[in-house]
Structures are given as structure tokens and as C-alpha cells.
Length: 164
Image (cartoon, rainbow, N blue to C red; front, side):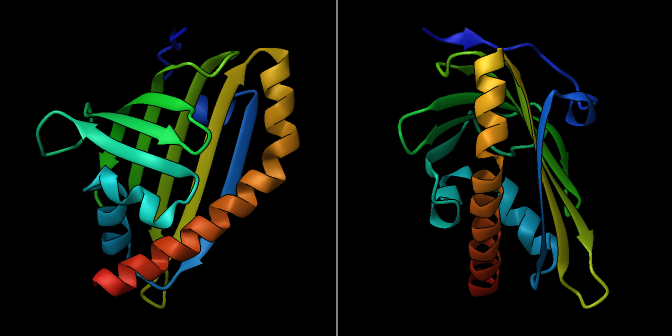
């Protein structure tokens, strides 16, 4: 059964009952990182191995208000909306629908800051609210999720360098 999630605002990123945060330093410039994050969702599986497929819905350009469809390994599906699209700085999306049981609200943010050496300081936040079982599972799996995100950030950086 598809569940429609609560339409939370960006305040949820700091107020959610479960928050997973991953920080990484990338060699690539914020402009290149943002392009890889926001321009073509279909490339996500190339660097984020937990993502099996991702695609925007509708016609470009894909900024705030755009819809996305994402399928994770294992078959979990999300219908998402881009909430914030600030080139080279911030990319935020909210899960609108999923079949994952127990979820009430879910939002993710990719925050990019220019590093002094020309690279990017990346901060990823996953904010989730759900029933007690989902929240407990998210907390228990948090360290593994953060490790996965760090590996994805490394592959994202390598892809940005390769695609220049």
C-alpha cells in the first residue's frame, strides 16, 4: 500500500525525531557537485550504489517543484518533490509517497560550501519521522547509513572529476 507522507517544510531538517548527518570534503568545485546532484537524476546509481534507479518526472528544467521517482536496492520506492534548488549551494527534496511501512515524513538535504582549496564541503542530512519501529531501525542503522553516504560522496567526487 502506498502511503502519502506529511508535507513537512525545511524546518523538519533540524526538528525531525531521527536525523542522520554525513559530512565530507570533496576535491570538486560546488558547481560540479551540484550539477551531478540536480541536473540528471538518472546518473545517481553510478555513484550512489544504494540507488537502483532515479528519474525526474516531467520536462526540464528541474528545479524547486520538480518531481522525482527513486527506487533503492531492495525495491523500496519513493516519489519525491524537490523543495529547494539553489545552484552550487543547496539541494533539498521531500518524500511524498512510499510503500515503506511506518514512515510519516522524510526529507533530505545536500548542503554545499566552497572550501578554501577550491573543493567542496558537503553536508548531507536525512531527516525522518515514523512509528517507533522505523525510528528505532533508523537509529540502529545510522552508522551504516553514514558509512554508505561517505562512500557515495567519494564516488560522487570521482564522477565530478571525470566528467569535468
